[in-house]
Length: 410
Image (tube, rainbow, N blue to C red):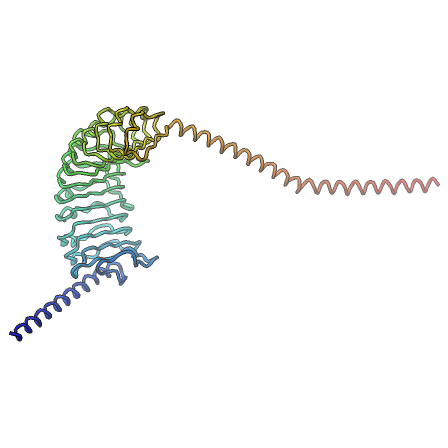
C-alpha cells in the first residue's frame, strides 16, 4: 500500500514538472515572438507586466506582453519605430485576447491575424492604416474595436465587413474623416458604446435606433469642421438604454425632439450647436446628472428645470441668459453651475482689450520717450560739447585780438 502511494506521488510530481516545463517552453516561444516584434528583449514579457519598470527614452517604452498560464493574452506595441507591417508570427499567439498598436507606421494587417480566435479587443491609435482592413470583420469573437486618429492616410468609410461582428460591444472610430454611417450599423445589436466623434458626418441613419443595447453615443463634430449634423432622426429616441449622448459642434435649428424620449439619459453635451430654445418635454428627463449646453443661443431657462432633481452639473456659459429662475434653488444635488452670458463675456473681453490697448499705448509712449532721450544723449550731448568748445575757442580768439589792439594803441 505504501509503495502504491509513493508511486502515485512520484507520478503527480512528474506530471506537475512536465506541465511547468511545457508552460515554460510555451512562455519562452511566445516571448520570442514578442521580442522579435519589438526588436529586442526588453524584459517585459511576463505575468502582470506593467508600465512601472519602463526605461525612459526607449522607442518600445510602452510595449509589453502579459502572460497567463504560459501564453501571451495581452500584447501592446508602441513607439516611433520603422515598423510598417506586423510580422506573420502574430498568428502563433493562439491565446491572445487583447492587441494594441500605437504610434506606429503600420499600413495593413496580416492575414495571419485571423488565426487569433480568442481575440476580444483590438486597438489602433495613431497608426498609418490605408483603410479599415475588411479582414477585421472575420474576427467573430471581437468585442471592442478602436481605430482612432489614423495618421497620414484618411479613413473615409466604414467597410460593410465590420457589421458582421455580432459580439461587438464597443466601436470607436473617433477623429478620422468618415463621411457616412452605413445603415448596416443596425446589425451590431450588442453594441453598447459607439464613438464616431470628430469625423465628417452630416447625416445619421434611422437604423441607429436599432442599437437597443447602446449606452454611450458620441456624434460630436470638430470645432473647425464644416461638416455638421443638422438633424437627429426620431428613431434615436428608441435607444431606451442610452445614458450618455455627445453632440458638440453641430448645427441644430431646433432642439432634436428625439432626445426628449431618452428616459435613461444621464449625460448630455451639446455645446456650440446653435440651440435657441429648450422644450418643456426636455425637463422630464429626470435622470439627467450632467448637462453642458455652453455657447449656444439660449435666452431663457424655464422654471421646469426644477424637475431635473438628479442634476449635479450644469454649464450654460456663453448663451444669452441673464438670470436663472428661482426654482433652480430646489435642485439640491446641483454642485457646479455656470451661466455667464455671452453679452457679459463679450463686454469683459471688450474691456480687457481696451485695457490692453491703453497699456500698449503707454508702453509705446514710454518707448518713444526712451528713444528720444537716447537720441538726445547720443547726438545732442556731443553737439552741446562741440558748441561749447567752439564758443570757448571763439571767445579766446576775441580776447587775444582785443589784447593785440590794446598793445597797438599803446
